[in-house]
Image (cartoon, rainbow, N blue to C red; front, side, top):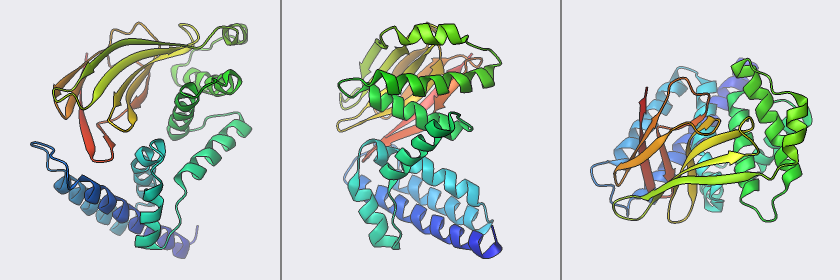
Length: 265
């Protein structure tokens, strides 16, 4: 990449990120977040965007945009793309870009990065919520997940076990659920997979209009505990030695923001 090309990309990501944060600020104005000043939070993020832009941190800006567009992508928020187009003149197709990334991973038959790992997990979650469940697609993506887990953990699940596991039904067991004190959000803890070698434990929050994954670890029967600290904060008790698949410090759906505190032993 030439200096001119990098500067062009820096300009583009800066403008889109600032417009994204303005979008979140506008949506949050009518919501009371108790002791949390959401506008100040987003304004501080805008300052950090400017700092990263000035220091030429293109990869960091790209990662920020990827993270910030997960929520509108998962909720199918079509107005987000229109807002970015109107504010910046740039086209951004978060749904199409996501599907293209998945197609590329499947064609390559390999997950290379943690970002790709998160994408595949998100697609599996999406497929599992559709009826009828497309087990063949889930199996293809799950095998990619297992391959990446093998690489990270240094273990190896035999091909025979993988093949036999495909014959089993995909299971989802809800271990617990609890509502926030104001009854506006639900916290769930679930296990899913095909067997104990081919499974994960997930923490999710269900908002009034959508849901969001918060934390996930490889395996089941992990003894993870979750509970509400207040209306906008949850606590997750887990262990440091788990293979973590997903971990967020906060999640958001439209105007709703929930912070996450971890107790790791």
